[in-house]
Image (cartoon, rainbow, N blue to C red):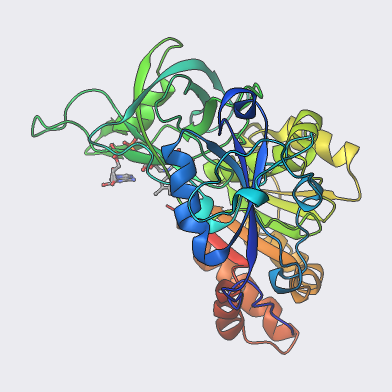
Length: 406
Ligand SMILES: Cc1cc2nc3c(=O)[nH]c(=O)nc-3n(C[C@H](O)[C@H](O)[C@H](O)COP(=O)(O)OP(=O)(O)OC[C@H]3O[C@@H](n4cnc5c(N)ncnc54)[C@H](O)[C@@H]3O)c2cc1C
């Protein structure tokens, strides 16, 4: 089996296109501009752009061959030289500053350019709740809500990309009278936000509830969020996380394994791939195969189910949606159908996909899902004469095995 280590082996001689908005003077600030810089100058260029108020909407490696075949976006490839002689940021040459044609290209997953910790716990951004609605149907187990925050007016603006998380600091104090600590939540929206305005973030939150000494205990932050009303102000930190970023390659294959609220990053990926407004705006036309395995206890607990069914009907060649509904479906042994049973059922197809170096696997949900998936992958690998305990670290090293469990 071939495991691509393309990313890990990339050399420092690569050139990058940095796509910027709001940089320069006069009319230049309205234009999207592209700076071409070598890898060694990427960091200083990014810092200079940020210092001067520019918003980086994309960073792309130009070297196709060393990027596992990932194509640089058309807009960054053949841009006319700018007529304006604005000094380029950092070490970037002024000649390389150009104005890119529309549509805007903003698929930034180069790790160096991914925003992190724009807002820290000591000085969080205060966002405003715009929406809070239930994601589960009648008869579901527990409470899961979709909550959206307005991030407008931040200085700097709190920006994020698909696959990252944000921190929420709930109001109030803990048992020692100290302010509550932040809790992390995977972002469920794309960088454009659910309303495509570019300054909102959405979360998918399950209220933690458990019994202790005959009493029902409610989780502090998850209850705070599930109960929150539109208009309320909330302390937000981050964004954080680079583990769950999507590949740049429009022809990548993406296998997603999600249970419960682990669907949050997958929802962002799938919107980015298949929502018409997203495709139009992001200039990233996904052409690979996406396969979502979703685990839930009951049908009304399937989150965003109608959206995923719709994507499957609209993009049958590119999206497949497989559900494991533990309390309603049976596995081949007559037991409850969990996500790992679905993985085993489709092991041949999954492994055929993994043999392709363009395939990435993403797993998100409760920590408890990991042993089951590992066991299924071990069995499936063994049936093909492969050793999963060797293969998994190789995939991880190649940045093709992405796990975020909590
Ligand atoms: C990277 C990351 C992403 C995450 N994304 C999401 C997400 O998208 N959606 C989401 O809903 N959550 C997500 N979480 C989990 C989230 O951060 C919180 O941990 C969760 O909401 C619970 O916080 P809380 O304040 O409600 O609970 P707390 O009041 O902090 O209570 C949690 C504590 O309760 C105790 N406890 C929990 N269960 C039991 C039990 N059965 N018996 C006894 N004690 C128990 C444990 O001590 C636990 O530490 C994520 C976590 C991480 C690290």
